Length: 388
Image (cartoon, rainbow, N blue to C red; front, side):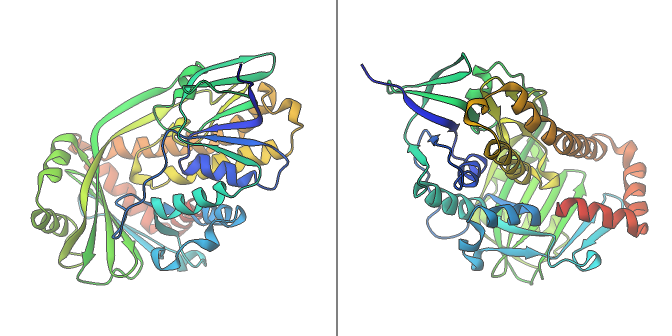
């Protein structure tokens, strides 16, 4: 008869949030198991289509857990400025210089960060990597969680952390409710080589056909994120490379001149997901398992890193016997609720305000942009919030 494998913490899901949590626990005495269904696959050459705007606070966290300093600096692009355009001429800009910092964010490929975290966690003395491995059943009894795997092994732990994405298996097994709001939109991403230098600037346009963003990448490249109604998104995905490049260049007022596709377009559905309770006895959720927001804010990955930072700090200060105690876990839940709720509310409100189907709100939304641009205190406060 196979004996249970015993750990203090079991993390299900080796995405960025799950990996970051494991890395953040490296200096503790806690034994950690990381369960992942399949080994990661990294892009071979070229650019990863999925990029993130990593806030300075997230960069500091990644540095503290030993990852940031090892990232290839030639693949990191500091973002010094962002310019936002309404659909009736309103304009708003944010500058790192205005608030006395070096950059507003770092634009980085998902795989760049994930690979460094993965390699670091694989070498981590207190982490047992179980991959490929898939969970089959979860039960919490007597203050301990038992996670059965499909291959017959059973993991016994004080705490199971769900870091397994929007369709979280752990969340469902724990009976934690998730409320979805479907935006009926696709997020279309692609990377381009640019004719003109971007000078570390990002652009965002609130257009009748969705929200278009240009994010600067190193070496004269740019990453596009177009949050578009489904019909528009499907049309973008059907374009050949030359047509897509011309269309994206025109939609962005030829800000970067002629564009050339270097990473083909990919699309994913956009939804808001709210999880009223992200903890239960013996269970905690982080990252996309705990929340999902519209990408117009660019903050999704930063929320996940903040979850990992807060939960790791809590666990490091607890006795082993109470790692899964609901009262202790609710401290993590309370500490994360304000930022997550505020950002979800703000991005959802902005999305609704700029819906292409609601042209009657055009005056209101563009007036708001203009007023914000004319009040430096408000504009700089928004920048400082984004910096974390």
